[in-house]
Image (cartoon, rainbow, N blue to C red):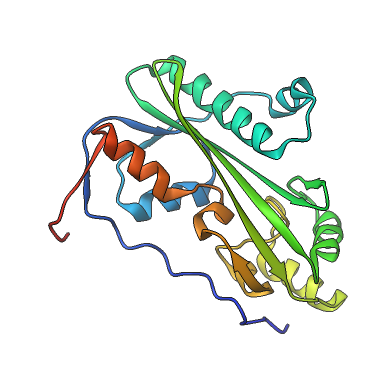
Length: 219
């Protein structure tokens, strides 16, 4: 398989110089979101939410990606926050979109192929909404979008990539944190947004609330 090297993802973040002062919960079972926070040096727990995302999407009756992302992130965070009122709960949602079509997790190799065939040679967007809740109420939200231009891929290259990375549960049918990043010739946006959890705004907000404390000292 030919892996394009026009775009290379940034290496994992070094652990930041800050202390975690209060309880933080990530309301997600995503291993990538967990890694983003782990790499930052944050101390946190994981509690999964039990919200029905499909029902929330139906109730919204909108194609506004920002509203959908933020609403789903808020629902996840509030569901966990109600049961953990003293913790700062982080909820997140990600949507991949191309030409007004939303791509859910493919789940099968056939769907992976269909998605990547549509994205091949085109520019699509990854949208990330984040909500932080305390005591069952949303206290902060953030939305970010990244644009990704994919190289033109042959059918053989697409199939080879799918076999290599097995992106069955990946938003957009590629694992950007793995071999998927090499499929792109140009990226506009934050790597952490593409991975599903825009990091710097979270850290800045938590620091402003004295949940974490930045330090000039080296680890």
